[in-house]
Image (cartoon, rainbow, N blue to C red; front, side, top):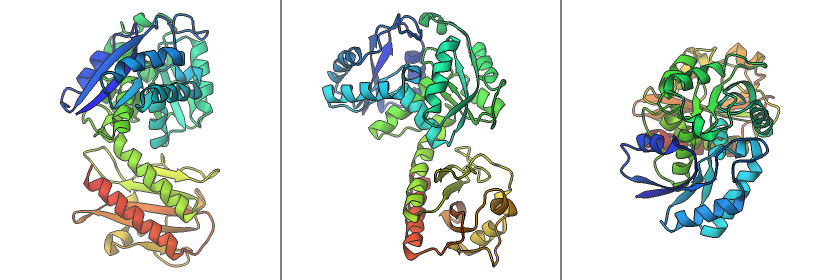
Length: 386
């Protein structure tokens, strides 16, 4: 049995029923709540107590229930700063011996695992709070390129909006982009606005993930406890976020071990909503252009992928002087001059492959190929134990 403790804003009436619904088919997980004073959301902090001492006092009560982790189920760190949340988590863990996290940490972890650099932001807050969120997220390599807000401060009022209004807010957040690229995901930043009931509908409409704060908090708290964080039918993050998190770790380690410029993983899994035409995970060296959100190529028809399908072994290309040749776009648009590709099977099918890209021609050493083999084994394990 996994026990999760959650610290709740006192005037929040959304997150507890939403979390209960999300866990309706998870008898192995129980949630235990306590509250801290929050009545209004303003940039000057009046009407709320977000300080570490208040958080620790609440956490001590949850610790009496011997919970496995403690989550501050609020998004104040999105405008107060990530360091604020990290300091609160450190203080909670020091006082209780229990790992801690927050809604903002969950949202930004989702952005990291999905490779989101351009985000749409939906909130009930006033514009000055939204501006502070935009500045803070930019510090963590996430640019808010479009947003929509209700311009409210009374926290209790946030929960009064119906599902249709929440869906409209999420869609509206994507419509006024002021920068390129277009939003790669939408974040609903507030745990007193329940987006969990409209996630599937809005994701289908927009064709992008929606990171609801309530869902993101639960997802990352489950990850923190080591429990199964997959909840089918509750939006992309709870459906596939855990797999993406693990695959992100695999491609990051592969890039670091090989010293290459970019690593990717492409996965076909209809159940999880993954298709090889978009990378499931990517890791790029500083200054290297991302390829993750480019669906322009039919990957299964590429010459190199056909070679992988036929041979089912690692393809090593220190140069592109001989076939199989990579697509022209990979060379000319993304500047790739050498690569290693490693197929990953599930049953009799090639369900995925890993890529290691180099901007310059280079030999691939035995250590590089050993790193690819290790990554293949790890991805195989993830895919077969999802």
